[in-house]
Image 1 (spheres, one colour):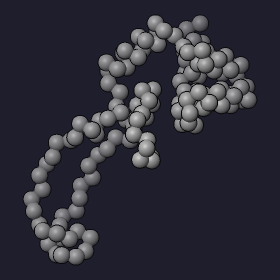
Image 2: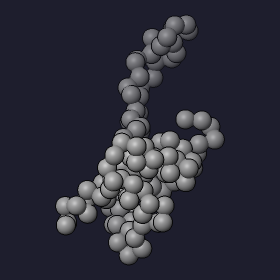
Image 3: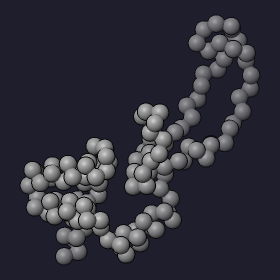
Image 4: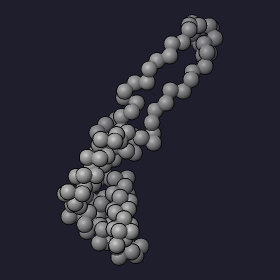
Length: 129
């Protein structure tokens, strides 16, 4: 990640859930002035986990709201075009769907995520039919 990548798009918030921060236990201090674990020996306090550590995790309410919005509003025009390309089913159209998503969303990672989301939507449509 670059220093400029601080803002996350709403559809990509769940990617950071897998990258959840956990506090690794640090080794005890040696009491010496030099070395890897240098420093004065003190008793360690158990600190509460910071709220910032859960940043990017998708909550129940957010997922429910997104589901309702998707149901009511439907797909964007470029998403519908992607669905049509994915429905064709050939490797070239699958790649073309990624190129379209990349063009609209800006990065390869976002495009791949959107293509997976759309292919999941196509699979769900096939299950219903």
